[in-house]
Structures are given as C-alpha cells and as structure tokens.
Image 1: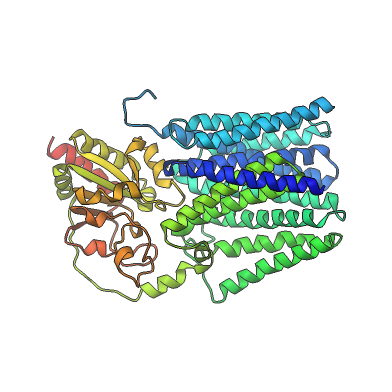
Image 2: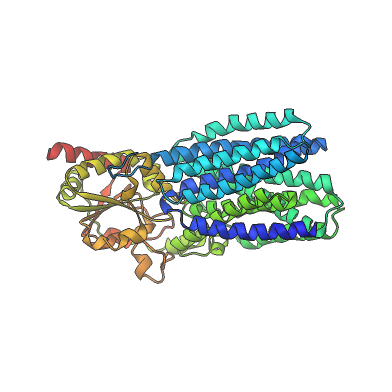
Length: 98
Length: 463
C-alpha cells in the first residue's frame, strides 16, 4: 500500500512537469480550446465511476456512481464536440491547403 | 482473467500517451485537430478497457449512465460560441461533481479501514471537488447573466474572515477524519462546508476577473481528479488530473499576470472596494466625437489599422460586422491586424474564438507583446468594446487601481477611435484618459450598429 502511494506521487510529479512543459507551448490563440480539451480529458474520471457503478458493492455506491458516469460522460462528449468545432474555425490567411 | 487485466492496463498506458500527444498537438492551429482525435481515441480505449474489467457485474447502470451522459453532452457541445465561457464553467462543475460523488462512495465503502494518508487524499478530493462544484455553478450563472447571483461583485464587511473560517472548518473536519476515520457521521460536513465555501468564494468576483477564476476552477477540478487517482490507485487518472491541473494553473498565472494581480488578490481582494475608491472623481472633460462617415474616411486613408476588441464586442455580437470591416479595408490594400489582450473577454482566448468564428484568419490575431511595438507606426487603432486593457493610466498613474497592468499601447497610434455606448466608466469604474487625448475620436453607439455603418460608408461612399 505504502509503495503504491509513493509510486503515485512520483507519477503525479512527473505528469505535472510534463503538463507544464507541454501546455506552456500552447499558443494563446488556442487557450479556449485548450481549456475545453483538458476538461474532456479530465473526464477520464468516468473510468472510476464505471467501476463504482458496475461493481455495485452497495446501493449508495451504485447510485452515486451512475450519476458520476452521467456527469463525466457529458463532459467527454460535449468537450470533444465543442473543441473540434472551435478548432475547425481557425483558418490561416495564407494560400495553404485547408 | 490475467490476460484481461493486462489488457486493461495496456489500454490505459496507450490512453495516457495519447492524452499527452493530444495536448502537445494543440500547440499550433495546424496540428490542433489531430490533438482532438488523439484525445478521443485515448478516451475510447480507456473506456472499452474498463468495461472489460471482470469486477463489473452491473452493466445496466453503466450503460444508462453513459447514454444519459451522451444525451446531455451533445447539446452542451453545440452551444453558440458566445456561450462558451459559461459552458466551460458548467463543465468544470460536472467534472467536480463526478469526483465528489466517487470520493463519497469510496469513503462509505472503505470506512473505517482507511489509512491516514489515504484519508488525507480522499479529504482533499472531496473538499476540492465540492467547492469547485458550487463555485463553477456560480461562475456559470454569473456568466449566463441569470437573475441570481448578481453579476456585480457582492462584498460585505468581514468577507475574507467568513471565507477563511469556512475553509478552516473544512480542514479541521478533514484532520479529525484522518485521525479517526471511524467517525463517519462527520463525513457529510466534509462535503457541505466546501459546498457553501464555493458559493461564498465566487460571489465577490466580477465579470472582468472571470478569466482568472475560470482558470483557477479548472486547476481545482484537475487536482481533485488527480486526488481521486491516488484514492483509486489509477495512474491514468493521476496523469490526466495532473495535466488538467497544470493547464489551469498555467492559465491562471498568465491571466493574473495580465492583470498585474496575484491569485490572493483576485480571490480575496474584491474589486468592490476599488470601485468605491475610484468613483469619487467626476470631471467633465471635453472629448472629440465623430460620425461613421468621418470614421470611414479616416480609415480609408490609413495604410495600417489595428483593431482592439474587448468584451463589449462579444456582448454586442459584433464579430461578424467586424469581419465585414476587415474585408472592406483589406480589399483597399490596408493592412488590418487585431491586438488581443490576454484577459479580453470572459475566459482565456475568448476573443480569438469569436474572431475565428467570424472567419478572420488566425495569423491576423496578434498577442499583446507581438503588436505593442507596432502601434507608433499604426495609422488607426480602432477599439471596439474594450476599456481597461487600453487605459494608459496603467502605465503612468501610480494611484490608479490598475497601475502596473500590462496594456495594449493604442494611445501611441496616430489616430485612436473608440466605439463605446457612452462615457460611462469601465468595469472597475476607472477613468480612462485615452478618451480625452487629442488624437482620440469617440464613436458613440452600439458596436455592431456602428461598425455596420462604417462598412456601409466604406462600400457606398467611395466605391
């Protein structure tokens, strides 16, 4: 158990560093799509909710888990749709191919 | 069984890699859409992997959840571009809701056998999740301009004391639970105190602070998801949460730098007091105003034009008229570019999305630092619905509440034109000396209507 938590801390630290480096490079032009995309990715929490609802260890867990699935899935679906809609609008003025 | 467990882990590892690539590809508009696809594939893989997990006995509830979520998600993905800020706030609320509910279930499933470190992380998850839930709902309601809560900052005496009390109470409950996880009666307090705290935290925030606050809530939502990853021992979730958390954090830093304010100042400073302080000074100084016809003739004589949009353009839905103006001027061989302040609008990048929606090429949208050096060589700077981000007092008047805030140096352009409804002060009630300069012309009217009139003059008057 202890070892798991330690590994998790390492993973968290490394991921935070990668996050900083990758996101620092995102153009300010795309800050709104960045926020909606990270929001959709963050909804990977649905995985935890699926296990909770699916395992059905208690009625409370199953009900809360199902509501959690609804909340996260709406973020996944809505987040990806709107991010793609926004990115499709960004066009260059150059005569490059679309 | 062993095969399928390894299979799940492999889908998670691929998903993690795709998530990181997804954000990497977002660095440029040319690769950004690939980033969305990477994210979608990663997400689909992880969900399929999870559905194969042998512990799942009740598929019915899972599918009900997935289908209902998709039904709610589709319209949320199709809102108008002007509604993106409130949609974003709402999605932070949903993310936080998911995390809080999972954390709550985990507590009741595991109590009282929860090791201290685990309980500490679980408390963090639930506290951050609940305060982000109500905080984001409040932010969304303010952005949607609902009747309640009021959009203006609501401040009262001792506000910071009350807020800090709520926060301390939540932390005290968390500490007790870490030491005595069998005290399950206390757990609801760990949810309800932060729920109230979230409301109290956002109520004093005004519209112009929204970019920072949305970013901060984004960061909290990410961190709470990472905490959930610790509780469930899911590396995938820890990484996704850390990416989201650092993204929100970076954006909040950029936003507060662009306003020359610290986080604590945004959250606990309350612009309300400043408003009262700046309101006293009321002078009637002469301003020069111009008609659409005059504006059109000045514009058509220019060779370089810089347009500076602000939240007023979004409110007036003027972006499509601005596009027509851009076309009319470009057709005459005039160089037109846009100067975008980082905090223009209600969320990071808000103006860029609106202008891109109106089909303005993104290489004409300039960041503040990229365009500021060019203003002295600019014939006309046209300010549409922006105020504080162009206020030269930020550079010169030390007593000004916005002193030190980086601004767009429009006052250095040869001619400045400002489209504004009237002489009312901006959001913070701060006087803008730009309007009284000799080189400034005030164009009084609704942004959409006025830009439309200029376009009509440009196409009709001179052919």
